[in-house]
Image (cartoon, rainbow, N blue to C red; front, side, top):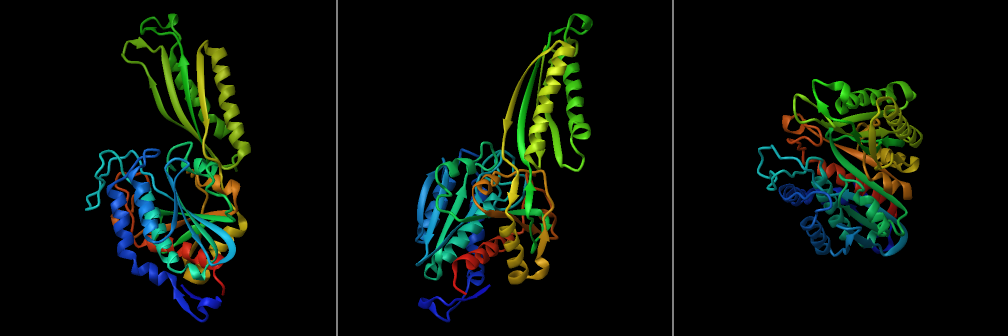
Length: 404
């Protein structure tokens, strides 16, 4: 990307932001690998925020720490007034054992970066380094939001917003590396892109007893199995089939012996939807089913229902802008229209407050090591994707903050 700026301080100066990012590639990779070796779980991040803040300060960027908990914000102020744009990267890891055979394998037992957050952070640090050396070109400000705890509700985004992370921000963008699409491709879409996510836990209180005398019991396992079947019928028989929705039971625990009828059963699950009306409908259906089972099967229950991240809805103008700059400034065939997915992202909270968009960057090559999906114990990606992610951020910065 070459910017021909008409800024009076640097008239006729040509700056190639992307080339500068490429020149820093080995350093960016080293940051990524350091973070990969030293992952930290959601809400337990301590060394990672320090690492980020230290790097930002070394670039001459103003830093605010402990934003909403463990978040970090970097601020670059341009020489002239203009828009304030925000870029977001997350940096928490997952409770997964790293099973890769690489030199940068996680050194923390049972914890690894299995979703690319180490790449998001290192790439955005590279972008911050490039732009910090050219602040005289910037007509406006850049806020770099390094967010903790994306993987665990209530999510770091909500807490950072409550602590002022979006104060004075005009527009916000975020990106995610993914092995779902090949390297060199950038994907986004207008409107809903990722699902809301809710979590629920049901505890059924029956009446235990001897396995040979079922008539004297209220069998929590039988009733729990019936509940699972009823819950699966919500999507198949209650929700309009053109509406994407999922109800999944991921955990069912009951009983402790082969000849004893279980006294209690615990079931945990998740609900994913693409609009708020369906989201509310499914919660209401779950509650109605439980009331019906209570009456029919003489069982008591408790329900803990937690509304998590909302639907991620890209704003039309900003999503269209990403498509435009990818096609015009990267290559026409680099852009893909993203299909909706029922995964969830707390980046959705930012888009409830400010215009913006979220995009995916392809990180899969032909090697088997990059074929594993996110949250897999062997997840890894082509590190050239760090440049692809950074390039989109740089193009967005050039669009909003430089004279052309």
